[in-house]
Image (tube, rainbow, N blue to C red; front, side, top):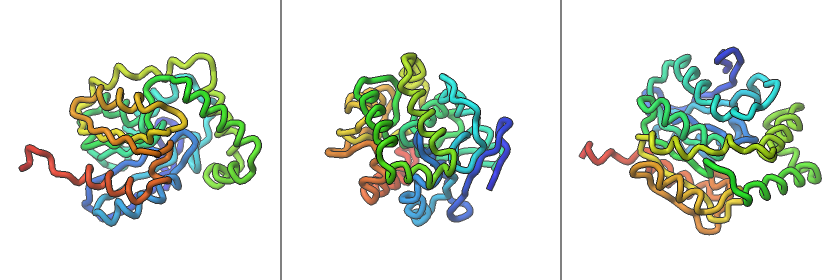
Length: 253
């Protein structure tokens, strides 16, 4: 389905039982709705209702002319408008990589709309390990046709524009868009921070810093895990996420 959000069209899907608590799935920087194919059925089975959407410029949503330096800072407004359009007052957030960072920003700015939040491989500042991972990803995309096909299945004929523009944005010299530590203290939602210890784009300390910055946050550092725990450890990831989202609040008894 398509919604008009802040002057552009956004493709979205909803799944799950009417009346179930909403979970909004926010995909990573090169992803789209299919990135959550391993999580949506498990969330539905657990009684959640899922909203997954292709962020502006990705998948089946409208193309964008450029990717400005502050594009992540703009994305919470799209989420806010989409929730309004669909009549969803509150939801859990599940974000991966860029999607995790967007979830953090949204939770800081619109705390009344966020129930609980899970962020996997989110980023709040730049690290050299991340730049190395990005350079390797760009090289692999240029060299390996099967790797390119993964993204073309999500983005179609504009895949090269989507992928290379995003990589070039993050490899640019000016990386101030990564500096988001200041927002963490504004977050009030109960939060689970997830990261693989061998994440190609961030050190384990990165996840520790996110968890330490959010009051009461839980941290799951996955031994041997890499950047995509929802794909690499699907069953374990789903179990941990669902347990966290479904856990009663302490004050509820």
